[in-house]
Amino acid sequence: MSTFMGYERPNGDIGIRNHLLIIPTVICSNQVCNRIMQLVPGTVAIPHQHGCSQIGADKERTFEVLAGTGKNPNVGGVIVISLGCEVVDPYALAEDIRKTGKPVEVIDIQSVGGSVKAIQHGTDMAKRMMAELERQPKVPVPFSKLKVAVKCGGSDATSGLSSNPALGEAADSLIAAGGTIVIGETTEIIGAEHVLAQRCATPDTADMLYHIVGRFEREVERMGADMRGGNPSPGNIEGGLSTIEEKSLGCISKCGKAPIKGVIEYAERIPEGGLYFMDSPGNDIECVSGMAAGGVHIVCFTTGRGTPTGAAVVPVIKITGNKRMFERMEDNMDVDVSGMLDGMTSLEAAGERIWQEIIEVADGKWTKAETLGHQEFSINRIGPSL
Image (cartoon, rainbow, N blue to C red; front, side, top):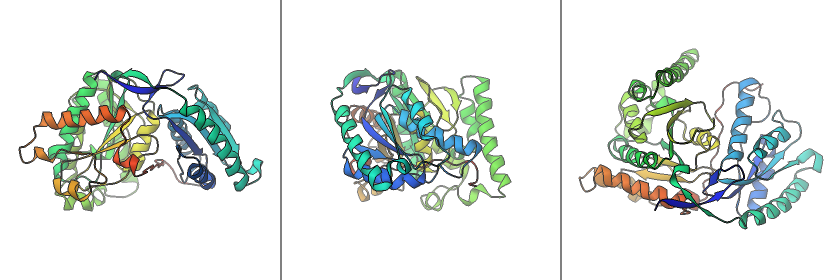
């Protein structure tokens, strides 16, 4: 298969899903968004705790993540729900998303007369927009258009030995097809950053990689904290990981062997073609939300301990190399590559298994997280609230 069936957006982007996204500009409009989502099947809401009492870079990050999520190619249309007095400008947000050419509407709770009227107005609007989206046809798309994020969480000793290197093989397959891979989790490469730096395509890219690691370490020092208090986590340690370095070496194997073409900031638009590193936290939901805001279509998520979480606008493929965990949490896991550990499956065969799952999900197959309704979303913070 050289193509998959996707949705062509007015700006040339291609989506593998066709969500109508309901965006609250502020925590105060979360419940209105949630009620509209409950009343109109096919809509997705992204409640969050931000949008008010934020300044400077923190305010800008909230805006950028909300706008980037609305611009994600898996989103076909957007309704912005504002309270009416928050620091995030709903009309500026809508206008930024409209640059993609997709339909965007705004509802102001205070102006329409409160939550009940906003829910009624939003529900009517969402039904009309969903009807339009459902008429949109799919078109054949080459895999060179596909952007996939690689992520790990709830890691154990099997992650670095099986699922992560197998995912690295699949990542190489996508890059060979002209597609894009993005890896993140700055906290998860510490102790192995020199290994990734050696793979950077240019000295400037290597310098940027060292810069973001140093920036994080300085912030930890400023807080007077010891990173080893939370990394490896108690679950990581119980699963057999002993040090940050051991965890990091396993982590970086999931992005394959391609050169790193660039280092980008959290939620920044991801370029097309090749391997990129996004400065992002190890926290699963914050990291994945930043990658979705950057424009990925799919997240491939390895886990040895097991985690059910998904994402709001992108399908998340769960991959494990832990046979006992797969059998215990089969409801949540998509791909089992534990055969690598007993010699029944080669690294190449395991990578091909993941690559085939990526192909099927791009072509419309639902992941376990999608089927279970997981739509987690969280914005990484920079500064304090006022």
